[in-house]
Each structure stands twice: as structure tokens, then as C-alpha cells.
Length: 64
Image (cartoon, rainbow, N blue to C red):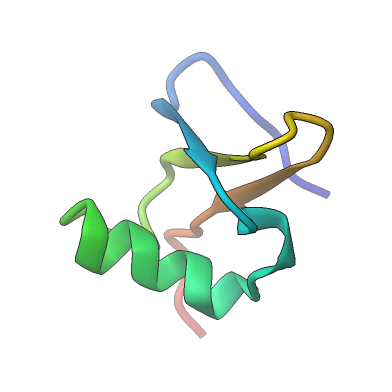
């Protein structure tokens, strides 16, 4: 389960086909396209073009 807190930063992104992409591909959008660290505690909200689906990408500071 993911706990979202007020201390996290939220980035909504309107994407065409974002809901169909894998989480690895969405991580690439965050790191390459935005220049951000996909493993940070920030929350990236991928909103489908028709705005009826979303995916959340939330990194973890815990490293295995």
C-alpha cells in the first residue's frame, strides 16, 4: 500500500497513452523528459488523454 502525505510533491502530467505504458517507461519519462529522479518520494500522476484513467508513480527511498 502507498501512503501519500502532504510532505510529498505532486506532479500531474497529461499524457497520451500514459495509462498503457509500463512503469519502467513512465520512469523514463520522469527521468529523461523531466530531469527528475523517479526514485524520489515525489508523486507523478499520469493522466490519460481522455482523463478517465490515471497511474501514480511513487518512488521509494528504500533500496534493496
